[in-house]
Structure formats: structure tokens, C-alpha cells
Amino acid sequence: MAEPQGAPQRDAVEISIRGQVQSRWTRYEIDSNLMTPADAWSVSLSTSGLSVPAEVTPGAAVRVTLGGDVALTGVLDERTVDVSEGAMRLHLSGRDQAAVLLDCSAPITSGLNLNLDEVIARIVRPLGITSIRIEADTTLPREKVSTEPGDSAWDALRRAAEANGLWAWFEPDGTLVVGGPRYDVPAVCLLQMRTGTPAAQNNLLRLAETRSLVPRYSHVTVLGQAAASGSGAAERKARAGIQAQVQDTGVPVYRPRVLVDHEATSVNIARARAIKAISDGRVQGYTLQALVQGHRVPAGQPGAGQLWTPGQRVELVSDPHQISGTFFLLGRTFMGGEGVGQVTQLTLKEDGAWVPQAHPSTRRHRRGKNSVPGGVIDLTRGAP
Image 1 (cartoon, rainbow, N blue to C red):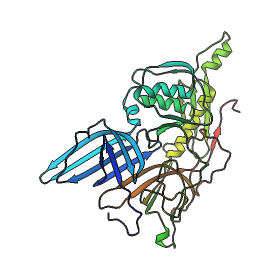
Image 2 (image 1 turned 90 degrees about the vertical axis):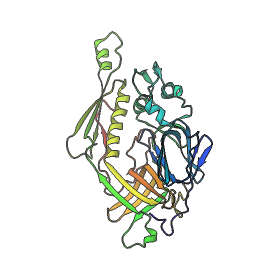
Image 3 (image 1 turned 30 degrees about the horizontal axis):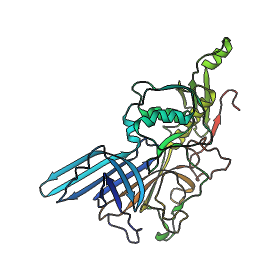
Image 4 (image 1 turned 120 degrees about the vertical axis):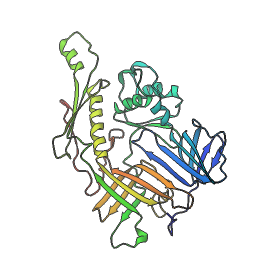
């Protein structure tokens, strides 16, 4: 695909590996998605005089920049050198810092009455992750924490985060963040596909809307268990039978789901886990895939010049889809290469749906017209 007329200025995509830097690629893709455990990147280079430095080997640390701005910090997973008559092709691919947590087993550890930051440090620091940030207004202490042989570090980290209704991801600079989205930040851009509007004002190249009932449930019940204590039978029974239930009023049919979480050692933890499950279903059940030119928020917009980054919010209007509202940028993919246009695919979700308890807010979210209906009701017995 040729560079469109009037396209944004190109960003040089540089891959730095052990002091070796390359910025001319035949093709490249750089992914980032808050719900994907490890963001992926891949680049290809075709040339007749290819020479691959010895430093470019699997396991090497990688830094990806676009126009000087860091887009990903991670590792080189695979290197392929393909040689045919008169041509050589190099393909490199890898993931961000989450790769080691996804691939490797969690350190065997156990503890009592640990805070979330203490739990996370015990899981990730032995694997070389030292830059950690907790982004949540409140977290719940864990009465008992343990990892078992065979648990991956990512699974242990995910369970610790989900017990607080949170999620984990890595920022471009390699910092591990455990928290949730900020729905109180202003939208960085207005994306539109309007009929009867000059083409120059319509900045969406393509927009696809997908709705699905498959990942959604009308009722989610979480069963937990805490160690029995005290001499009274009533107290032992209460502590051994922890339960929380949450309803999604936007699901039109009865679709129940029961989750057993032995790490839900209190009703609050079980409730957070149930709300997280409902929220994840709502997020997965509604998706907008938008294709835009360039890798940055276009000129004339509030966030002009920023790289498209998961966590941003955008206003979107599409007459063909009958959509108008604010949406949350869950993921993006940068795509391009030498002699082709630079484009970004944006994955947009319902605003305000994902892990809402990370940063409780009294602000009302402007949901998109015709987006996901309904709300979340806490049905937990004795819930405040």
C-alpha cells in the first residue's frame, strides 16, 4: 500500500539490540493490549547484502522506539535468516517484559497477611522485574498467599491482582503496573466517519463493530474459602463458606457462571473477583476495530502528537454504525514498512466497563450510543 496523499509525517521505527540499531524495515508490527499478557513485536528486512550481527541472538534485551519515543521494552524471542538465490530475509520477533513471567514458573513462596505490593514483589523480583508501580486507590490484604510448583509467574501475578479487582501490564519503558484504567482523563481525539462530510475531515480509514454474547454471563457467583478459626461452629461455618454474587443486567437471558477461587479468603475479595469477571465479559462482548493513518494522534486534536497508547480515551462518531460516544482504547497495533503507509489499528471498548474498582469515581461515563446495555448489581447476601 502506497503512502496516502496528505498522510502524517513518518515515524522512524528503531529496534535496538545490544548496541545494534536498525531503522529500515520491509515490514513491522508492534502490538500493545492491556488484556494481553505479553505485547508482541515483529520486524522483517529483505536485502541482497544482509549481514546479521552476532549480538542479535534470542534472549537479548530489545528497545523499540518510534520517532524517538519508546514504544516497547522487551526481549528477542526468535531470529530467522532465510536465504534463497539472490535474496536474504531477516525476521525478528519478541515480546515485552511480561515474557519471562508468562514462560517461567513462579518462585515457591508463602506468607500470611501480606499487602499487594509485598505479594507482587515476591513473585516478580526473583525473575528480574524491579520497576513496579501499584495504581489503585485501595487494596485488600491477603490472609494467606502461596504458590504451587508448576504455577507460572504470570498466573500467580494475575491471581494476586484479580483478588483486588485489578490487572497487570507493562508500560513501554518496562515498568510493571498493577491497577486499572483512568476514566477521568479527557479524550485525546475525535474519530469520525460521517456521511456528507468532506473526506479530509473523516479520519477513520475503516471501522468494524462486533457484538457477542459468548463471553457474557447474567450472574457470576464466586465461592471462596478461608481457614476456619475459633471454637464456635457458626464462626467456622461462616469463614469456610465465603460467597459473592454479581448480576449483569445487560444480558437478556439467564446465563449463570460459578467460579471457585480458593484465594478469595474474604467476602470483599470474592466480590471484587465477581465484579472483575462481569466486567471482563462486558469488555469482551463489545469491540470496535478502527484503522487510522499514522502512529500518533493527528494534528488539531487535544492529544495531537502523542503515540496511540492503550489507556487513552477517544470520542467516536460513525453515521453508518449509528455510534456516537466516548470509548476506551484497550489496544493498538502499529503497522508499516519501507515503501508502504504507516497505519495503526485501534481496539476500542465500552468506556467505564473494565476493572472499575481500581479507581472508584463518581463521574458518569458518556457511554456510546448503541454500545453495551445494562449495568452491574451486587447480589451478595448482606452486601452494603
